[in-house]
Length: 247
Length: 247
Image: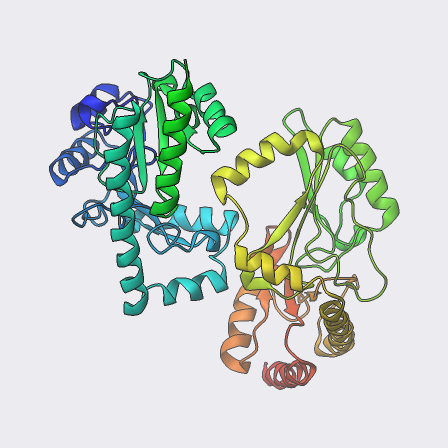
């Protein structure tokens, strides 16, 4: 389902209802989303849960970025209905990417199927990963993650301020995750070759829209804020130098 | 496909050919096998690889117990053909069960599919698991695993000698893994309730055939040799006491 800037890069309950067919079993959403950083607000989420339930489907929420918001906590969809499943991980907010440890919050009735999948796909999460995850729940660790969250928000604020000066358009301000999704159609007709040139000529990595789907991928690029702010500033300067050298 | 004692609990190339249908895409075998400890010898394996190739299928070999043999090393099926895939893990021979780290040896042509599966199912093995696995490949670690292998062989020899005296029949001597699969039909008509009673009355855990399939599960039980020999001896004594108290 293609979502655009005019719905802040998230689907509405009405769009889901329109796209539903006899073959639809579930809808899977991410909030905050990668690559847009778009968030479903509580009203939208409540409507979507109601519509999906009414249509007899399941809602699978990818909440891997839920702890990473620019401001204000987000409420999980977990426990919001017998048709709502929530996927999360220690990879993003807790920064334990390489541990491959996450969790699923699912209604009781789905347990037999979930157990069958787990038994056949991975048996259990890595023991060391579980130990790491347990430590990541301590108050000391959470304090570090909160500090990191605020730092990421600061980086996003910086990029959101700097990018329009370079010719990028930000139709929707990202509210979570650590990405800024930008419209680059004022600079190029092909985001893919643009990213390639920026990498080769300016030494800056941007991800083209094509990596995320087929909704106008040629006019979008994704900036990531996982590097520190000095590096982001250096990247912006290089981009500026490169863009001003273009004919 | 049911395999019995008369083929040493492994299928023959001829059996595979007979069972093949238009809908068969692959055959999956384990050698050494759980629960039987049965091994495919080189001649058998070579024939099976040839027949599966001729039939246009793939052979997926589960070699998770390949390092654990009572005597003599086994040769992997890896690299034996463009239709042969081998699955292995650090869980058994290397004893790193909880790390959920393993590997697949697959022909080049299967890589696009394998990558797709990996990307969607687990992305990558846990970083910590990979570090542990790397250490498990050192000479010092291998020396420990070889000592353990010989110790497990000793335990299996002990059980194979002790069990017939209790009334179990071992139609095929296990050649690998750490299991002894025994015919218990001289002691019970129902291995499941038998295991339950043995657990309750004698405090000994045996696994009923039902946990492994539907090939005469009521007349088989699996003994595991992961406990040390003193504990195995205590188990045998308790079993003896229990069985001699039965009417």
